[in-house]
Image 1 (cartoon, rainbow, N blue to C red):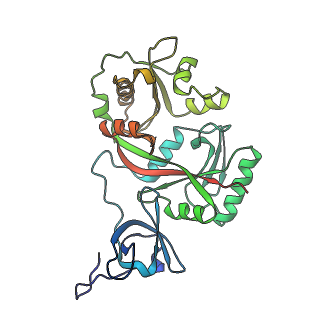
Image 2 (image 1 turned 180 degrees about the horizontal axis):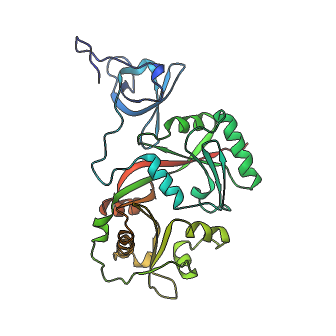
Image 3 (image 1 turned 90 degrees about the vertical axis):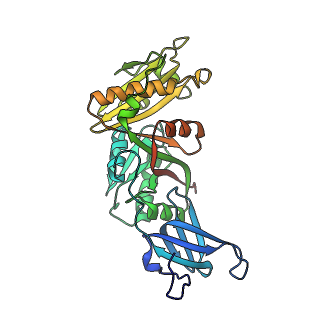
Amino acid sequence: MEFTGGGRLEVRLTSADVGKRVSVRYVTDSPGAGGRFTDAVGVLTSWDEGVLTITRKSGETVRIAELRLVAGKIVPAAPARRRGPAATFPELSRACARGWQPVESEALGDWTLRAADGFTRRANSVLPAGDPGMPVAEALEAVREWYADRKLPAYVQTATGAEGTQELLAAELERLGWSREVTAELRIAALAPLGDREPGPAEVRLSRTLDEPWLRRARPSVVTTPAVRHVLASGPSVWFASVPGTGGVPAAVGRLVVDGRWAGFTAVEVDPGQRRRGLATAVMAALARQALDEGASAAWLQVETDNDGARALYEGMGFAVHHHYHHYRRAEA
């Protein structure tokens, strides 16, 4: 926090600092004697009518009455990562998009509207990468109409928590009545340590072919359609891993997309009755070795924030959070 020459806390922020990363201290209970102090760090996304909004790296928003501020200052962008490979948000965003491609896409300025017959939010949401070429409210109305024509709900994917992410857009979506439905972590790791893990007792088979047994384990509740097959088979270099199981259904599966230096892991699923046997680790290690053979050196994956088991597994494999992404849905009129 900032101090004046007399050692007093000082607010060194104004509404002109909207869009910058800030650190503030404020009183949560009563501004008078006995009030409890707390801190917030994030992007200042609005300062209107005496209320500040700060968006934390997780996407959580904190609203603070101006009169409760005790101290505040602009702070540098989040420090460089000490774990995993160096990576920028735009680079990772592009790699993830190439690894999970929609059936149909259309440009709206620097935004990309994506559709795949409703299979996953990622393939059926707007990917904003800059200016839509018109006011945001107008762009969102065009988005709503585009998805309505396809009988799909309108979603916008945004990211928070890294340099160049979209805290201001997320705040604008909320102001315009869009609701955040899902939050996920984008995690990254060095690839070689994953490939160096012991193979373990499980036999892992790799294939370029997306077959029905793999689909029955990876997406048991999803009806297989051409759109499903298109999304899962999309990417520069795609591999499907499986561990033999019973009844013709694999005990575990996983999907890999190799794209330059990046290896993207998706759809890692294990038979509930076969969990805690190291099958997920075996699948990912086998896929990592394939990616290393193709020249990749870094890995990414996405995991929803409420999936505690998967998050713990990936943490143990060395995957660290790079940023968060969120899907906002337009409330029905």
